[in-house]
Amino acid sequence: MKHLALPVSDQARSRRFYETYFGFDAEPARSYDDDVLMLYNAEGFALALKPTMEPIRLPSFLHFGVQLPSADAVRAFRARLAADNIPIVEEWDESEYVSVKCLDPDGYIVEAGWEPDHIDALAAELLAAHDRQLRARVPDALPAGEVFQSDGPLLRFSGGPGGGWVLYRHLAGLEGAALDELIARQVSFFAERGERFEWKYYGHDLPPDLPERLLAAGFLSEPTETVVIARVADVAAEPQLHRGVSLREVTARADFERIAAMERSVWGDDDHGWLPDTLESELEVDPGSLTIVVAEAGDTVVCAAWIRYAAGTEFATLFGGATLAEWRRRGIYRATVAYRANLAGQRGFRYLGVDASDDSRPILERLGFVPVTTTTPYIWSPR
Image (tube, rainbow, N blue to C red; front, side, top):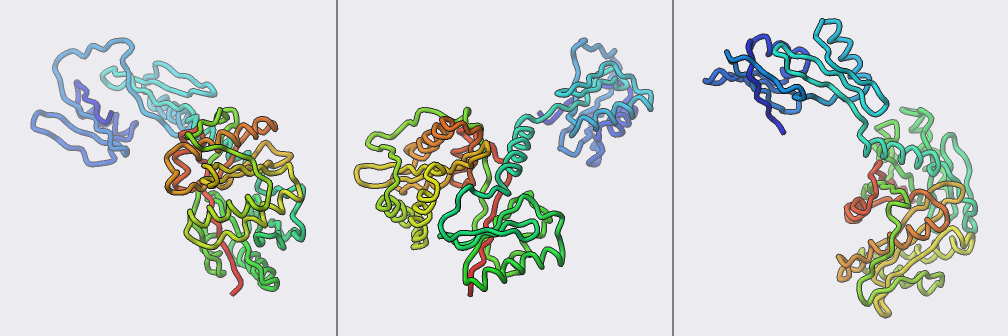
């Protein structure tokens, strides 16, 4: 609803009230031939005031109101009303609901209230858990040859089959020249090794100019994805498979090569030669940390997806999910999500996280995943 019309006994007095206390002065008021005065707030809501000589009689339950951004904003508004001797007829102050109701000059009851947005509250809870448990976590076992070391707030990993990467929960307030120096040290380290590496930037990371500083240091950005998280119990289900398609857990090098071939077909490039090595080395180091699943139609891998279990945390994370074009829109990706959610539940994990592409995000949100932030890989490669 974007419009409310009120008969009033004194139009000028009502105008002052609604402009002073409820923000209906965001745009110039408009007068119409039938003596109607239109007022507008910042959200574009229109309040029409029309003078009347008739007595204004109101049902006891009738009231209307506005939403304020926080509980403290409602409390401050209530104090302002009281200081100006505006009649207050009802108020609530509870953890899930803060409200004050007052009377306008004609006795209309107007409410200002706040209650938590449960989706926003859930997203904040999930993001906090993600950052606390995952963003500075060192895997229990690393592939052969991969090592890590600390550099200020960063953990720097090198020597792995997929190249290097840096990890951090936050940058400890570094900015400006100090941040540029930290970035330069990483570039120098990997340049000496002739090794590419990834700096994964999250949309809520500080300082906000970090992406510009990475680009200035020679990094290239890859497509931004959305971090979505769900409670395992909310998405675990019996996989519903398209006829002729089956799911199978795989551990053999030959299957990893088939997955890489499928990925090359999906993405139209030759940039997946690292994938069999990565999957194989992870399983060799810690077989219980990863489950790889393929969806097959006969002898053809039509989709591949895997799940990593972050031991010592409440999180398992989903990867892959690419599907051959001719097999899309048949529920195969959804089936792999349900299958992997069941695996996570069986192992006692509470949350599932995904760095979701624009293609997979709508599917995941329909399944109950909540977007909490974005992530953008910044890649530095030797010249």
